[in-house]
Image: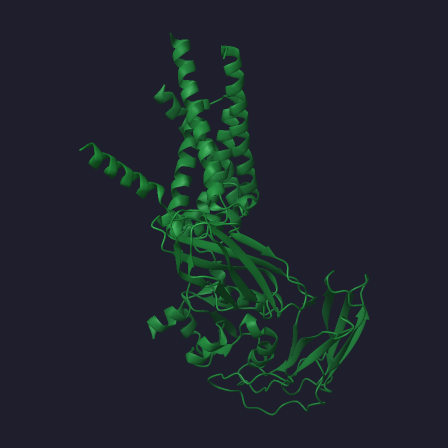
Length: 257
Length: 141
Length: 146
């Protein structure tokens, strides 16, 4: 009787004492990718501080732009590891927050699910406002201004602007402080709908200076169907259900990016 | 003693209402009281459909999801390839057109982010986020 | 511990607890829109409730914090703060069980770098302090009445 009571008590004690626990070094990681970085990588480190192994059931990112890699499927007691989350920056700018939800076989529901957060502040190399200027067909071809401001991580000293289309003229004026400019865009003729990409070429970094696009177009008169084909070099062929098929503005030769 | 605590508690609850109401009045135009996205920026599937040709649809989802299926006539414009896709979308826009941006569901942020960039960077007016996203479109199909 | 020493100790705890809630309230008063989004993250309440709570709760915290510090409407303040923190702890555990990422606690975005155990430890410590203050206040009232 005493032995049975002791065994029972011990087994209860062991059940209570035996537990899986995945401890995370950090649940939230702040990343600061440099200008021009294509990815931001976060290493979420963990350790099994419990007494039983932990198995990962699933590791899912909140968006397709973040991929995850788990070093192991089962983490033994005392073992350490990490989950690597790679955020593909693409053309994103500003404060980004992506999550990775980790499900384990921990019997404790508050510990079975962990949400890891990756935060990244994507510095915008050049702040271009607005990035799109337009005139209505037949509108007076008045110049429109675009302000350019280089971020402190992007020390460009000079910019030049090239247009694919001879119909759009552009003039660059330096701003009051270094790293600031104003571009004045003027169409010669607004009688026909047409569009172009103005390429803003910087001088930074020296080895491979970056360029940025600004879009300018003459819109159709209201009520007319869309009649423009974008005149952008190297644009990928992306399917739309009703492709716009229209004469393009005369190409003035490719502009190197 | 308990009654005193209750009386004091009720008095504090009432006192806190005054500055709270004042702050609510101050922020009344800066916040949407019915939805996390300002009501002026949300549109239902039925409302967007009623715009007919006056609406231009933008799909903010990843390329593969757009490739599988999308709203007929929609333009792909996501943040993965923003600088390539924006020049393809813009020639089809004109002032007066209402831009309706959607992503997979109510809970995804991509449509909100793309709509914000169209408003801030391209300075387009009348940019809306589709309530319920692609999921809602499919339900109403 | 002499009566005078214990009074000093309770007073210090009053100031700390009251100060914490005033600080927490002020942070949220400065950005009620963000607090509304934080409450909405728990997905326990509809937005139109979350946003109204976001404007009201911080002021309630400030007033109750002041009540505790200045011992005016003291027990009422303590009771409300105890109820608030208990509800908040319950909501945080429930959200965690649903796998939601709650990056912000009662300190708004100031606590966004804390992990779940850190959040819970601080919140439980505050709860214990509040309950202790309530008991101490009851004892003082009983002593005065006898």
